[in-house]
Image (cartoon, rainbow, N blue to C red; front, side, top):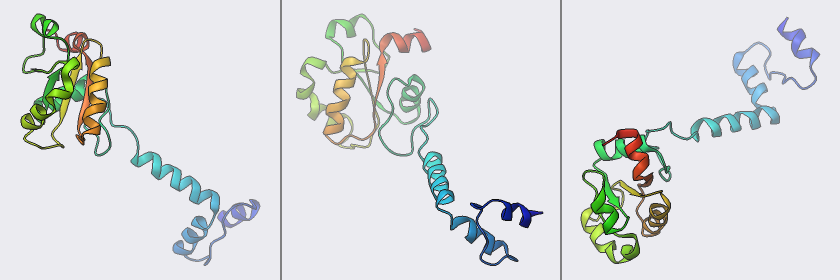
Length: 164
């Protein structure tokens, strides 16, 4: 029945050696459409984004992922930076956050290098009020060679998820 099915479809690959599984596999992979489909499947399989809260194996860290930020802080001892104004920081901030003002951020690059121990692969979690300023700071840090930087978004997002 398998042979009659293969014979009925002109595009179905024909095995090199009809009696062997290896021959059949070679025949299947000899088809351009099959190779393209397999390549696409492998690409999608290995390049799917991480689920929320998971640390990606490679590439830049995603932004606005509260679970990821919490995981980096709790498990990876990430540097937590609040890039709002001094007034905003004094009103409320996440416990353990270090204040580095957005307006003067470039003046604090040496301080960040000291805080990370010079490790540009140490995770850094940024936040502000809405995520806009933290996003701009993330761009600067990436340009400076830091590889594990995420923008958790705004303090309100954190409070909505974790309270306090």
